[in-house]
Length: 505
Ligand SMILES: Nc1ncnc2c1ncn2[C@@H]1O[C@H](COP(=O)(O)OP(=O)(O)OP(=O)(O)O)[C@@H](O)[C@H]1O
Ligand SMILES: [Mg+2]
Image 1 (cartoon, protein in one colour):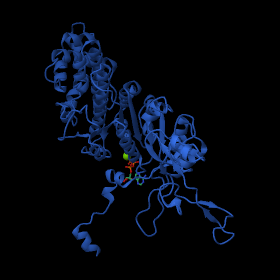
Image 2: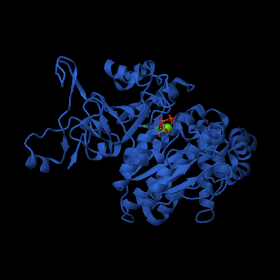
Image 3: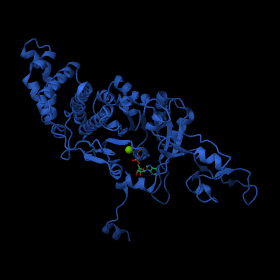
Image 4: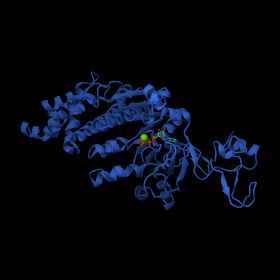
């Protein structure tokens, strides 16, 4: 049993629980007639089995208690627990195990998701951080005994034509189920090559090009089945050769010129891809495969330069595709009785980066992430604002990006300006009070008169929305261990060099 507020009964607000003493007008502490402070009664938290036997004045919590302990209710101080997986499986509060988090930079979004990751890992769920840009999660994953894979120019790559874990699982499973998994792997590879072409071109691929690509990939797989992994240069070689099977989908009617007209733009894009900035990372064999038995996995892409928009977007998508493929493979093996069932929690942080990279990329993300529920996978998508979707080219793209928020079972907002909140309110339904509360968290810190430690007022404050229910405002207090594992402001902390010390003494 734990005492919820206060380790010191004389000053119960001073410790873990309600941090604010309640001001009560008219109550006179020692002097008469002024505003005094009434200590909130000491509260203890326990299971219903223990509490009712020990103490008759038990009250249920007004806040959800299923899932990872996130923080305290901003108004009542009650503990609030939650994560998309537990709210979907155990509590059944949400119909889709997906979380969408929005908020201004630096307010603690990644820190809160790190906490979910640690809490879920403790229950046996496997966290997969697919494309860690800062890195925000690598240290946590290492601390959990997980695998950290580095991707970037010269540091490691992903072969986008490799069916990865899905290919291996299909071979183990065999029969009809194995073939079905292989067909799914084919779809994933096709989607990923289409994503790379979209990024290189800055616009989506045509439908008929997709058919050509599909036919070429099928042919390649048959030719090299069981042998060495196929690579992007092999795909280019097939297009150059023009075998009948690929020609058939171009309606060339036996004329080479018609075939060339149909495939040249795709051929050119793929050659450009190989020779361009993305080639070295995606055209050779995968450097380190995801370990299907790891307790947590992080694909670290933080070595890719901030300004390298195309490579960042491509690496993120390749990491998602590879990671989600691993999940599909794991479930297929469990279905076939060949491996224990494992649940996964994927983190797609900084979603705005790939969204901005190219028109049409939203379709690719949509195709990658739509099947979460059937995949036995909970996910967290994190971005700054809904405006990230507004920056997309077409209306259709914007609508699809808004669909990510609409489909999310759980929407969590850190501080956002009022205009953004009003916009978000049109998608998830927010009351005026909720809008005012969250927009007050987006105000900048005050001018610190003496020191340099003014925290932004919204740091660590979040509003959790589920469907049409009233939002739950929470305050997250981080522990030293968490601060140590994830401090994105380290580069802003002065280092004490010998010269610096001399100068300041
Ligand atoms: N609840 C909290 N209390 C105090 N400090 C916090 C809290 N949450 C986060 N921080 C600190 O604030 C900094 C920024 O946090 P974090 O990186 O999680 O923000 P973010 O919202 O993910 O930012 P971005 O949008 O730039 O990714 C970190 O140094 C972290 O240690
Ligand atoms: Mg972050």
